Figure 1 (tube, rainbow, N blue to C red):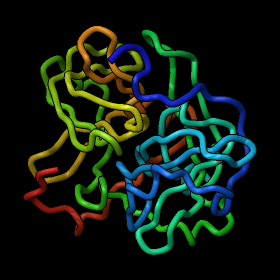
Figure 2 (tube, one colour; figure 1 turned 90 degrees about the vertical axis):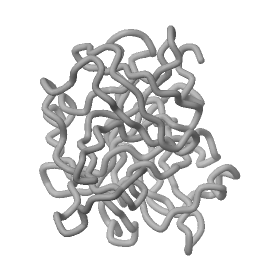
Figure 3 (cartoon, rainbow, N blue to C red; figure 1 turned 180 degrees about the vertical axis):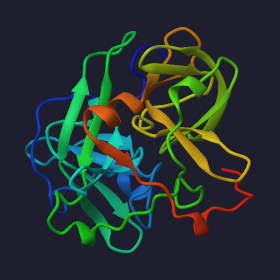
Figure 4 (cartoon, rainbow, N blue to C red; figure 1 turned 135 degrees about the vertical axis):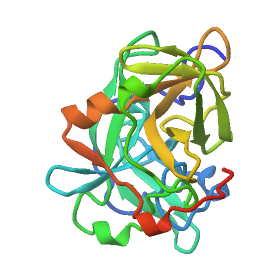
Length: 245
């Protein structure tokens, strides 16, 4: 895998998709989920609401005003909104992008976006779950100083599903780790798996590493601060031991 093997197209602009999209993405029906959660597949749309890309939900967040949103890769913003395949209700519009950065696919080039959930009227109609694919509870984000070469990181992508591997490099805004990824995994959650069964958020997957087939993740810490976002952690009663995914 070379370059941005996780992407479908370059990002352009911003537009609204607050309701179900005009056309369902044919790939999306293969990835039903009961709610929007880290690791769930999302289809992205062009400004004319035609299907465009296919990415993965990263971390659920709230902004400083309490509005719900999610993190994903910046290149997933193709000018329209996004949708997911609800297991009961079919294709459901998630919302529109409110922030996105897509500087390229080399080195420290930034690649991250915020997708507003419901934007913000009708947000209660979009079901959400803070657990990774509804299984592994989300804890507080990692302190950047915790990242060390050799530590095991995991990511969950809509296409590849769960993959894990050791950290091979830590940059100012990125972390590289030896785990494979495929198209459609862009934006998926990157995390530490903890012994208590929880996940400690680290970043979102943005591309495959050029040299070794590993994964490059955008660290979320700087963007949480810049955009005044808070990661939605899972309430303590939902956390338990024994998770294997």
